[in-house]
Length: 154
Length: 154
DNA sequence: TTATAACCTACTAAAACAGTATGTTATTTA
DNA sequence: TAAATAACATACTGTTTTAGTAGGTTATAA
Image 1 (cartoon, each protein chain N blue to C red):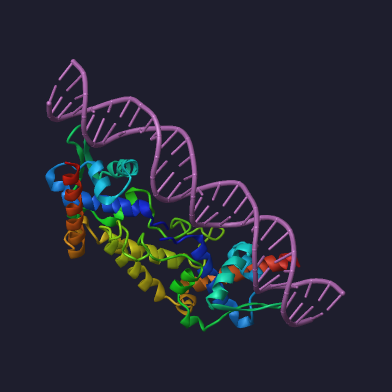
Image 2 (image 1 turned 60 degrees about the horizontal axis):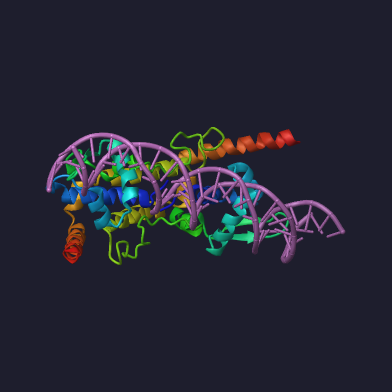
């Protein structure tokens, strides 16, 4: 089982989209700046998110990405899944052939754990996240920081 | 967050100890054979399990390892922890400095998830595992296989 | 004294991770 | 129509981790 920067970045970027998506398509450059994620890396992640139809894209100037569905119909588990991080904790990918073709002593335990994690993460939607008090505080601070940066540029 | 072969091996080996420990100390060679885990790799894992005082050792012929506590006082979370696999899902190890010194947008989510997983795994003891029907079936099959191997050797 | 099995340290091939680099293509705007 | 923008695509790379191997030393029971 893996839960690394890749999955975290994907969820963070999608939440950023959910928070700012009302102003039309959001460019990866914007997300990159706000969330401090390398642009090239975001591009790779969004290629997968697009394949899984979690986002849709608009090319050209003023273009960017939009959520492909409303924010309460996208959950965290499917975002992590889309960027190829498996939530599965078994060594056999659930096949049950972990010990010379049969299940290993602890197969059931890891299978249970996987379901537990999946249940937890699939119950959390982008919509529920963006309405959390703590998320809103962080989002507010981030937009203030960006404003400062922008005015410094001018 | 990592949950890989290392943590799985450690839990499997500890469960093997719990299942067979009534016959005195169990050698790593036995566990290696039953659970199909490389002996050298087991030695490295047990060095850490011993440091964390989850097992005690007996050297010399007939020696091996014992659980350092009764099986219902050892839970899966501490075994995984002992072999250096962190259950923590945050990128900042819970410090909350994941976004230029402050928390990132999704810090709270990963923190929640970590607690969820920890609560689940720390609620499962070796004792509860060894009394599970499925575990007993697998253990039975394994001891039969070993018996066949032994009689073939003779 | 010999065999056993823990204990210890260094090394290694392969994979994954996170990121960089260098483009091409579609679309808007001046 | 040219320039700028931003998605889209692919190949490459340094670093770390993983899982395991190799080659010992030390303690103890038979």
